[in-house]
Amino acid sequence: MPDSHLQHLVCCMGQPVAGNPTQYMMEMAFADAGLDWRYLTMEVPPDRLADAMSGLRAMNFRGGNFTIPHKTSVIQYLDELSDAARLMGAVNCVNRVGDKLVGENTDGKGFVESLRTLVDPVGKKVTLLGAGGAARAIAIELALSGVVAMEIINRSVERGEQLAAQVRDNTNTSCEFKQWDGNYEVSEDADIVINATSIGLGDAQAQVPVAAESLQSNMIVADVIFNPPETQFLKMAQERGCSTLDGLGMLVNQGVIGFRIWTGVEPNAAVMREALEEYLEI
Ligand code: NDP
Image (cartoon, rainbow, N blue to C red; front, side, top):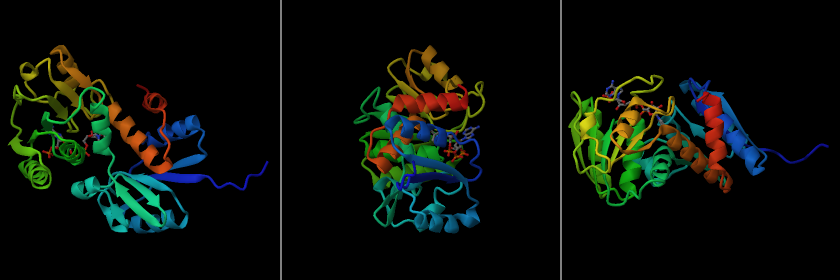
């Protein structure tokens, strides 16, 4: 029977974007929640982003995810930013509120939500490996969540120093940068150690240069790599008796947060994780 109801639309824009698992995860979650929403994955080159954003407004999309290379450039087409997105200078989730498009960043929030399944970040000391986009999102969100001290370890000095200064200048978290040279010895007072580099992406054997004996059993060790989720870094941490968090948890939780922002409905996170595992064949 014909239905006059219009489906709600959200999307993912990026380039290259084929193989991005978010559509599959979101559509499974919409179906599970009984919501008549659609999620479209759209290949948008940088020089067509302005047109695509006009289209998104004209076609009344409820919002979308933005991935490489649009996380920074999309900001000029938005009406408002959340505090975290402004501090990160990057948006990965847009929500339409009335006529306004509001930019949010759910990467760091997804990480923190995953972390909270093991520990409250308030008052904790963090060692963060990496200073790229994922590291920046995690650093800012952890600082806003009450982490007391953070050290940022990165191979290239400029990015590492910039991120440490940004955390120091904009939050109450003390933060220092150390250049990554050889096997890094994690200091024994660290509570949480995070690999936020791309080491391990698509390579289950890749080694993150960290001295295994510096990992203590009271530490929580996390990895942002979600494919494959069982990284050498997490295996090394498990052998040292650490509690671990894989990158799939972060990915699922940033999806959970986006779903919640758009629909106002709490999705079934287990359905989303299952969908991701099925799509990624893991
Ligand atoms: P970027 O390219 O912005 O940053 C990469 C980081 O990795 C930089 O700090 C870089 O150091 C470091 N790095 C890369 N290779 C090496 C190496 N051989 N030795 C030491 N450091 C190295 O990438 P993103 O931050 O955007 O993404 C990083 C990873 O996070 C990706 O694998 C991505 O898939 C994953 N990710 C996971 C998410 C999730 O939900 N689980 C969400 C977002 C990202 P340098 O500055 O010196 O180049």
